Image (cartoon, rainbow over all chains, first blue to last red; front, side, top):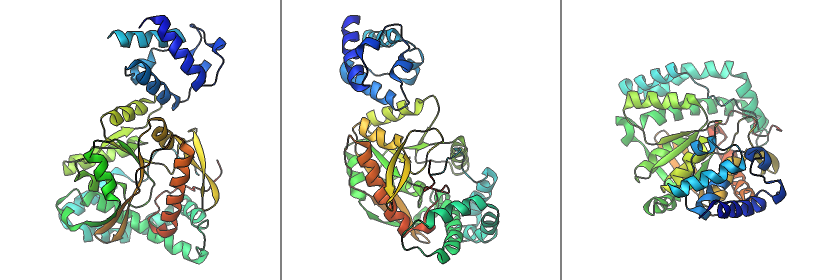
Length: 81
Length: 288
């Protein structure tokens, strides 16, 4: 799976799950603030990533995520591990 | 419900003394010590008394005149329950027995290595429930708020040499959510209290005795988001060495509100039946 496919799948789910307009999702936007994530939303994210990409995310993984690009790249990195 | 600082009452030194007395002199002697310690707590823990009073006055058909003696007995029962929590880990274990309602549901989950969220409240003894599960070889993770609980667990392990559960400590960095997820993936049981919350936590409203009460959203949201069975589990002290263990039939729901409503119903029943074992010392009816 390439980065564009990851972005497409991820954005589709985020739009539906967090009820946001796709237009506000930009690669360099702040991931947490844009989605207005609370702690329990991370459970949704972990489940979504696991179901769609078959990879597991840890708490440490999220420490490196600031922007949407970071999130996409994290999934790509996990897929390539 | 009262805001909670995340720290439990009780001193590590006090636990030290009780564990020594249990080991050297036995359970009855430990209970006897309560005649000296309970009045101290009853006199000085004014806020706890007030919160219990405010809680009990909301129980339908509960006479006001009964409240002071119920509170005193409640303090006494807390002491006895704490002693039992330690005693069951010692050579005195065989003295304890229990009746059960629904234990088969949990045995079935353990046999299938099916993870589940076991939701409870501060009523009766959570540790006893965990110890009863231990004999089924299930791995139990207890989700706890504070470092204090960890200290006490370490002390118990140091003095008694064993422990029947793993602790998942709730932290600001949300690492506990990932630990819960890992435990779920491993087919382990997750035990969590759902009758009080830390200030600033997400909450969900459900009716306790027809009054709207705030509960922590986390336990109900986790069960629904991770799509795993949930059961409401309690262990109530029936007599000196006997507990009643109860577990409801595991259910699945993707709606945390449904789970919270069901929990509130079960909790209402327990609170009205066993106010003397209600150890949530924060006013559950206080508006957020």
